[in-house]
Length: 53
Image (cartoon, rainbow, N blue to C red; front, side):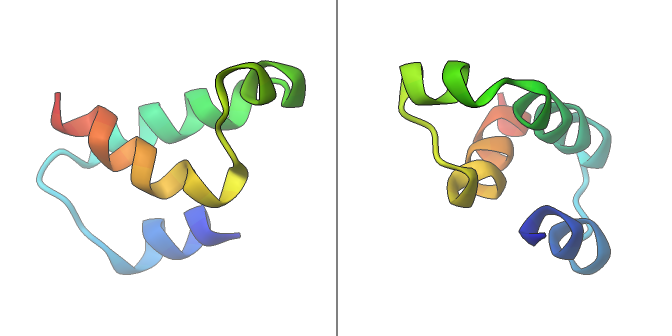
């Protein structure tokens, strides 16, 4: 649910890259996320970092 709040509240200069990164994280299976140590609560932070690159 936090990603919906980020979409609604925060506008970014690189908004499309942020959305793409967030969609990629959402598309990963739970097993894939567990293998690399990503928790769902970290999605917004990780997507912001990915969109800056």
